[in-house]
Amino acid sequence: MKRLWSRGLARHLLRHPADVVTLARAGWRLRRDGWLRHAPFLPLPDARYWDFRMATVNGSDVALSPASMVDAATWALAQPVGRRR
Image (cartoon, rainbow, N blue to C red):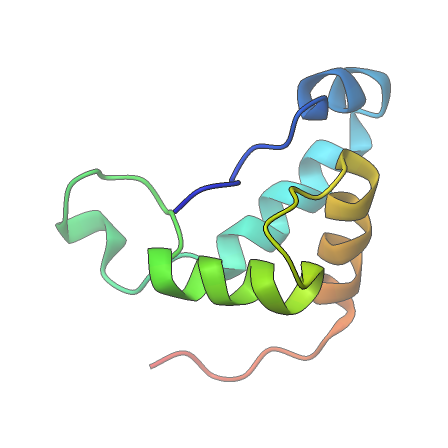
């Protein structure tokens, strides 16, 4: 699971602190089921799912820019959420 953090993201978030909330909310939606029962005890997405999402949003192995990450998170939050099992 690579590319969770983009180069320049910290600098972008310092300049645009409201984007922290947007990225955190979108990241929370991507967490794997049962994340609290397995190490590491972090709400991270499943590695295969994350790689799939990065390939579908980006189309290559190039990391997203911070602005693109915020745009993708904003779009994801605008989509309806299905029921979680």
